[in-house]
Length: 283
Length: 281
Ligand SMILES: Nc1ncnc2c1ncn2[C@@H]1O[C@H](COP(=O)(O)OP(=O)(O)O)[C@@H](O)[C@H]1O
Ligand SMILES: [Mg+2]
Image (cartoon, rainbow over all chains, first blue to last red):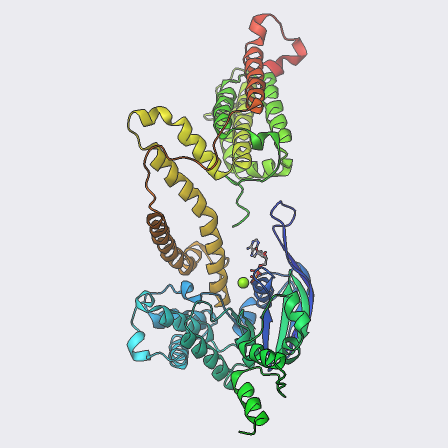
């Protein structure tokens, strides 16, 4: 399923002194199977853009097509759309509310029309998938969990209804390095099962370079680049214009290049950098 | 949620915005007194003029003021209808059981409705033109006499300003939580009253959790900066009276006097013409 964004603009609090143009004529297409990174500095409109995909923000100017659904249509089946496109918010642990973890995770599936037993089964699957001990946590209150566990429970609550597109808004913000890696591994695992398309907002260029096949760069609500990580991170002008910074591996490659050591790799992650070094010195 | 009008500051660079908050508070009190003093329609015209001039010099779009009135329109209609059917008048037009509609009743209910509308329009000018901090600082300063009898006025002011500061934070939080639950298929605008009330639980619980968390964090932050409400704290922004305040006070005084004068029909010096009697009723 393809997501097509055409000339999308959005203004918060229009015609007041608080007026804020958050998106300005953004167009791009997300193909099925893509893992797209959306990057840009704080306030560049990334969250606003993503909240359009499942109609949490209704389109005020422009068009979005999800598959053959037109999101500007008057009669839009919101429930079907939101089941199809799951959305993980920034700090999702703050959306936990029910008295047990299992019930909280069942919330989504139940809303999307699954029966009691089916919902319970989906919740169990999801909790296992995020690496939690189902028997242990199912009757716990979500508020008793540790920070990292809370986030995983919240993620389970989003993936329980098996969306085919997952939008993640800074999924690794505020986690320790191990927690970060676990989340990304989880996303990659999900992509091998029911998940087809991933749209990921991130400030971490390492994550973007290593996981995405395409990147969208937003700057002050405008789309500046729609390209591959390889091209973006080999274009110093683009990086300087958007103050994004390089992934660590690309940074090291550039430092080496300054000292005359050219490597035959875009060096999007540590492994490819290491492999290129080994090749160069025939290790 | 973010479009809450009642008690929201509207930034602009105007005469009224620059007034001392204490003066504005006192002027609003004078205005309220004025609204309750008026008796006849011609005196109302003075107050309407006062509100219009107030709005113009505050550079607030008229639509904003009208919006604040929209919030109480139901209350206005309700009281107007009650006044209309239960006011005892002499010139009865229509009556049935205990309900009478009289000419006096019509005028009375009209005046009461006008009074409510003017009250809200005038007082929202204060909240539109004064920041929450300005309001609480002004109130604290005006509460000075209470401080002399050991009322903790500073604590009260701090509590008020924190509460005011939390309103936009929490409303933003509500937005976020609602979106997150909507993304999980929650719906807040379908079904009957019971269903809708139940649908709010997944919003209210995280909201309370986060409000308590924020309160704890704030308390820690205050402690970490060794905050305590000792007397003689200095201020970042010192309130000072200026020539503007004098102008504002004089201007309001003119209206107050003219309302009283019009109310009393110029101390009886003037007999209203036959065909204009309704203006003076
Ligand atoms: N609910 C809102 N009301 C008003 N302005 C908002 C709201 N949400 C975001 N904005 C503003 O819109 C701009 C884009 O915000 P956002 O999409 O959250 O950016 P990002 O996710 O890239 O940091 C910012 O300037 C932000 O202040
Ligand atoms: Mg954001």
